[in-house]
Amino acid sequence: MSKDGLVKAVVVLAALTMLGTGCWARLDPASFARFANWPNHVHFLHDAGVFQIGIGLMMLCALRWRDVLAVVLAGFVFTNTFHAANHALDLPLGGNASDPWTLLAVSAVALAAWIVRIRQLRGRVEAGS
Image (tube, rainbow, N blue to C red; front, top):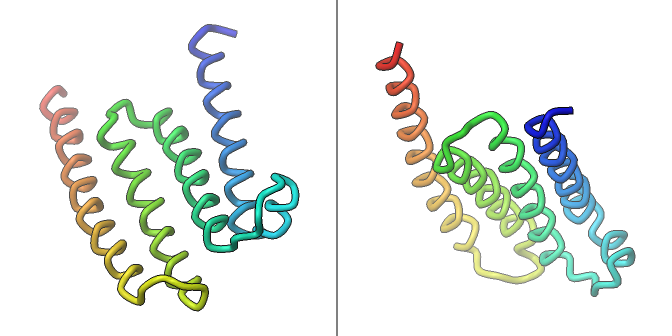
């Protein structure tokens, strides 16, 4: 295996680990809390799961896009949007009714920036052809 192949394999393995544990924490927080020996704080575990999923997705995006801004914006949009969903779904557990909307507004701005960045990158490719 080449050095590049080894690096990509490690990135995929690490990303899958983050995705797996993130999904576990998000979908079955009580089981994850028992395994990790943490308190079963449902909202915290939902958020921790989403953040781990976001890290895994950013790692996979980095294999596709070589542009750091495109990668981090995509990861942020996903993670922050699902963070907003956590706040909406977990509202009976606490927090402010405005939290999901505030988080979604920030995601919308970041999504606009991601779209602009992708268009910039496509423009560079087209200009270079």
